[in-house]
Image (cartoon, rainbow, N blue to C red; front, side, top):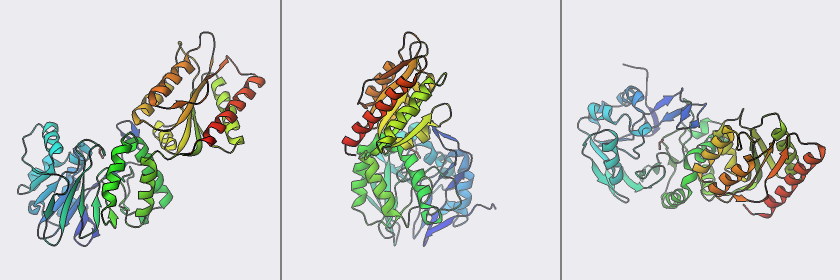
Length: 398
Ligand code: FEO
């Protein structure tokens, strides 16, 4: 007997997931507010469990299921996604629900057995296949690369309920399960951060998945992380539509590190130039700022301007780390340029520019280099560079 209880999300449909208050890093994405691993139990003539959770939370999952039915009564376990934050408790569930049939798409079957060094039997499903539970049914929709090649969504037409796994999620630990129990702007902000750090490189598959899901009649979206969308569906779907096509606005990010404040002073003057022309601008010093927050801000920014002083003929490692992270997220349709101070040989801005090009960012202006410490005239050059960049931002439509 434990205190973990299921949460009813619809009549005979329950959230039975786990809350991870302590998660602070999800493969490089910093998660200061923790997360949840959402799993769902549908109790009909047949009983189905949609997804599991991370392995250390298996007891919590089983306890929440047990608050509704004995896990032994589960008939079907659906794996929408192989990644171990959703499949980690599968071995425990196989023991707790020995009579259950396990269901996944073809790619997931292969990859789950590879992950768990097993030869488990599965019922393999593909897009359009349905499973009757009695009064309700489940339909499967393969959505490769949202987030891994195996990813799948499960839809219950009788409840107008979509289980999209990673899509529409947020890394947010909370006892409140529904969107309308939170401040909308706060959860949209977390959804934006999640999209930028997890889904951004997968814009084309996400668009395809959105199109397919758009044909379904949906009144609730129950993702595998964070809150369940029941009131603000239109808001979150509209956000996903914008993000998946890289819609940006007249906004610039300036991201830098500094050695003796020269690059920092350049950053401030460039920002003044940008804002003087009405371009929304945010500045991040990488020594104090979390790169996961910075890429969240990049999602709707048209310009990404990156600065570093030269160290050993290259950029500071903080700037290199940020650019490596950004490159993996493949932002599209952005412009940028490089700047920084140097002492003798230089090299930082050239190295930054090369990384921006490799990321697919269009170089809108030549790099700006200042020797040692900028004087007043050089800071005016930085201000003018900001104004010129503003003109580039404003002439491009988002
Ligand atoms: Fe939440 Fe791709 O795992």
